[in-house]
Amino acid sequence: MRAGQDFSVKTAVSKTAGGVPHRMRILVTGGAGFVGGHLCAQLIVDGHSVICLDNLLTGRMVNIRHLLGHPQFQFVLHDVILPIPELGRIDQIYNLACAASPKKYQADPVHTFKTNVLGAINLLELAGMQDASILQSSTSEVYGDPLISPQVESYHGNVNTVGPRSCYDEGKRAAETLFHDFHESHGVRTRIARIFNTYGPGMCPTDGRVISNFVVQALSDQDITVYGDGTQTRSFCYISDLIAGLIALMAAPDSICYPINLGNPVEFTMNELARSVRSTIGSRSVIRHISLPVDDPKQRKPDITQARRVLGWTPKVSLAEGLGTTIPYFAQAAQPLMVAE
Ligand code: NAD
Ligand code: UDP
Image (tube, rainbow, N blue to C red; front, top):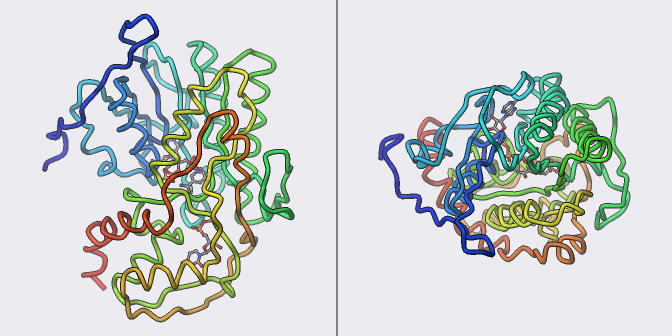
C-alpha cells in the first residue's frame, strides 16, 4: 500500500439528539505520534474532520499513512511553539504535541519545555478565539517520584525542578496551570487528562520506552535491559483504552475541567514485565541489569476512581492481551532494525 492510497477508513457521521448530522472540525496537535495517530483515525471513524498538526519531531508519517488522502483528513507541518497558522473553524482541540519518551524529550530539553508552555499558550488562545473545547494530554509525570500510591489527582507530586526529566515534568505541570488559568480567567472550555504509561501498535521501535525496548530486544534474542534492580513499577494502559478515555473526557460536561487520571491500575515491576515479555515471545534473551537513570520514579499506579465516576470509563485490555497485538506489530515494524544488527 502506498502513502495516500488507502481510503479504507470508514466514517460514520454522528447524530445530534435531533438526528441532524454533527461533524466537528477537530485539531489534533502531535497527531502523527503514537497516541495521535490512533486518535486521528478514531475521530475520522466517528465522522469528524481532523486536522493533524505536527512538526514530526518524534511523529512518523507511517502513523497517519492510512489517513492521507482521506477527504476529512488534513496534515499540517508546524511547530506549536510558533503562532498557529489560520486553520478555519475549529470545534475541538486535542493538544498531544510533545515527545513522550525520556530519551526523546531529553534530547532538546529547552524545546521540550517550550513545546509544553508556548504550545499550551498558543493553543489555549486559539481555543478561546474559536470557542473550542481543548484537552491537554498531561501525564503521570506531574506526580514525579510519588510518595503515595496509588496516585490520586489531589496529590501534588514530588518533582525535581532541576533534573533530566524536569523539562517534561515541569513543562506539563506548567501547562496544567495554564489550562486552569485560561479556564478561570477567560472561560476557555478545558479538559486535563493525566495519562499513565500507554503502549500498543504504532509505537516507534527505537523510542527507548520500556515496552518498545523489551519487545524488540526479546524478539531478536538480545539482552533485555532492565534499568536498576527492576523493582520500580509502572501500570500499562493499552492504546484503545486510552483513546476511549480521551474521547469520553472531551465529551464530558464543561464542569469537568479538573485533572483526571487515565491509566490501567494493574501495576508491574520492570522485572515482572521483562519476564512476561520474554516468556510470551519464547525468547532466549538474558535479562541484564544496567544503571538506573537519574530521577527514575519508583512507582506508578493510577487511582482511577474519578474517571470511573465522571466518565464511566474503565480500561478493558489486560497487559497479556495488549502484548498479544503489540508483539506482532513490533515483529513487523522493527524487522529492518533486527536484520541490521
Ligand atoms: P509521541 O512522541 O509518539 O508523539 C508526540 C507527537 O508530538 C509527535 O508526533 C511529535 O512529532 C509531536 N511534537 C512534539 N513536539 C512538537 C512541537 N513542538 N510541535 C508540533 N508537534 C510536536 O508521544 P505519544 O506517546 O504519542 O504521546 C502523545 C502525548 O501524550 C504527549 O503529549 C505525551 O506527553 C502524552 N503522554 C503520553 C504517554 C504515553 O505513555 N504514551 C504518557 C503520558 C502522557
Ligand atoms: N526501563 C527499563 N529498561 C529499558 C527502558 C526503560 O528498565 O530498556 C525502565 C525505566 O527505568 C522506567 C520504566 O522502565 O523505570 C519505564 O520507562 P519508560 O521510559 O517507558 O517510561 P517512564 O515511565 O519512565 O517515563
